[in-house]
Length: 129
Image (tube, rainbow, N blue to C red; front, side, top):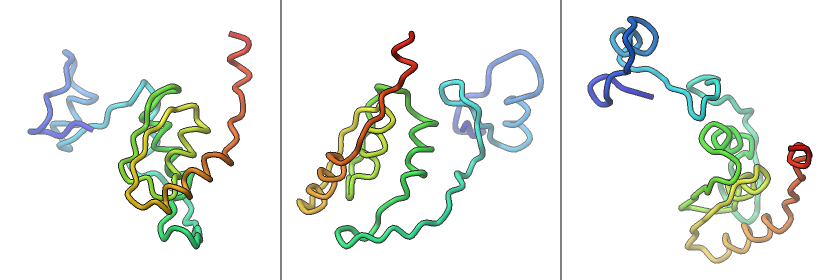
C-alpha cells in the first residue's frame, strides 16, 4: 500500500490508476510479486482451535493466505513469537524455509512436534520442468 504524504508518488506519465487513487483516496494498493490482490481483508472462517497446550492457535488458512501474498517458494519466513508453530508448519507445507523464536520451552516442544508431523507433498510439476 502506498499512502499519500508518506510514500513516493506512483510513477508513470498517464493520469489514472495508482496516481488517481493516491490523489482521490489518499492511498493505492500495489501487487506483491505480480499477483492479483484479493481484498484488503483476508476472509477466513472463524475456527475455534482448542489446544490444551497453547491458548491462541491461529487458523492455518490465515497464515497460508499471508504467505501466499508475500513470499515465494524457498523464501525464509520469520516468526518472532513462534507459539504453537502454525506459521512454521504452513511455511514448511508451502516450501518456504522458516525461523522461529519462542521463550516458552513447552511451546517450543509443541511446535517441534507439529513440525515433525507435517508431511510435505512433492510438487509434481517440478519433475517436468
